[in-house]
Image 1 (cartoon, one colour):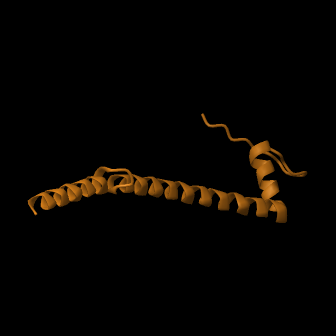
Image 2 (image 1 turned 30 degrees about the vertical axis):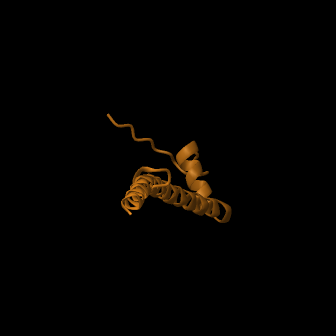
Image 3 (image 1 turned 180 degrees about the horizontal axis):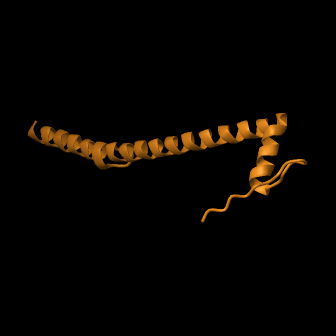
Length: 90
């Protein structure tokens, strides 16, 4: 009976070791949860960036105002009949 109890205690201790420190144990689970949280945060940022890009693409496809604004800001283009003033800081 005493030997049976010792074997049972050994098996219980072995299972506890696997639960806490073994492969797929609680520590691995904790590290994986942290990785999932980081990936989720990264995905949320990328989704937000993609949504902004899609809205800009739709704006460029549908309206000429967005195209005109980009041409003015990025290329420095001026409409016919407009006067361009450049203000140079000191």
